[in-house]
Image 1 (cartoon, rainbow, N blue to C red):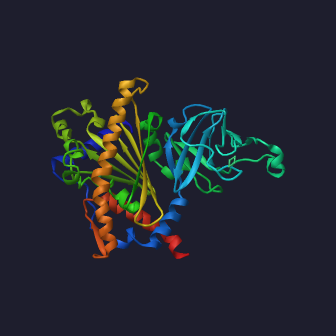
Image 2 (spheres, rainbow, N blue to C red):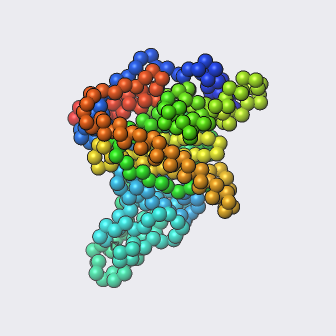
Image 3 (cartoon, protein in one colour):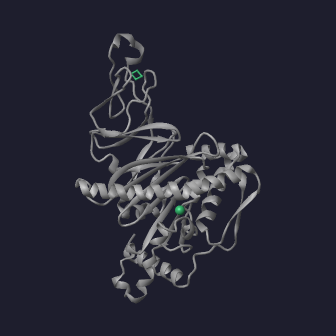
Length: 382
Ligand code: FES
Ligand SMILES: [Fe+2]
């Protein structure tokens, strides 16, 4: 974001804080409880996600030629590589022999050997070695390759499609947010690993927890609410994506400071909701990424939480500090947000009330849900 944009957002946030209000939608928004519980919605949602571009990590997870990383997306294991030519590629992490996972985690290698019978693959996905080759005359003739998936780097992030025949056009998909997200640089910061939450909550319910700060004063009374305002959000949408600015408590101090001296990024947390299942939480010090996926039933989801830091983590104490910050953020989501909404999911499944309501003060929820409804409409009609 350029400075003019940041100053404008800060002015808007400061005005909301001063007026003790928040950006408001024209009306309330009612949602059927079965949005979060029905098998039909679960099926349609899963199809929507499978058909959507998937942000799977930071470009810094493949920092140089000769590196690889693995990701689990919607239960599928994906291998990402950056071969000697520097190009990002993605493959199903499925051995051509008996379908073992070829590798786990991330690292640097010229070739990857399957742990089962040691078939090896180079980082362009070509089968490079078969022990006891005479056993496989048909398979090893020609040029066998792993199944390649569309992959792209954009805005500092790694993107794939789970459909091998899809075309990825992420700059068009992100629109004006492509340049804005890139300007943060968080995808090039040092990655701090992944933490996984496998929880008894619908995937949309998980994402809902990031879409408003109305709950900060209650749910995060002793954590986030000590630094950020509650029920005070600047909202902007960008097609199917949106941005929320959560002002920090100190924003009111800017009243007495000339605008030229403002340091906007010290006064806010910026949350991006990327369609359909990604949340980014950005500050000057942390680039948090939440990848949220439906699991095997409507009432379960998997959240993969990542974080990146602009600090130099080659220093042991700095790395330990960054890891502690990540753990704090993660435990807050796990123990405060997700723990609370597990009870909400149970209530929704009990069928006691047919609807729930989003307030005018929860524009992120309005936007997420109206966008999801639009996206599954064509599937529903088939
Ligand atoms: S399953 Fe990979 S080598 Fe046998
Ligand atoms: Fe929360």
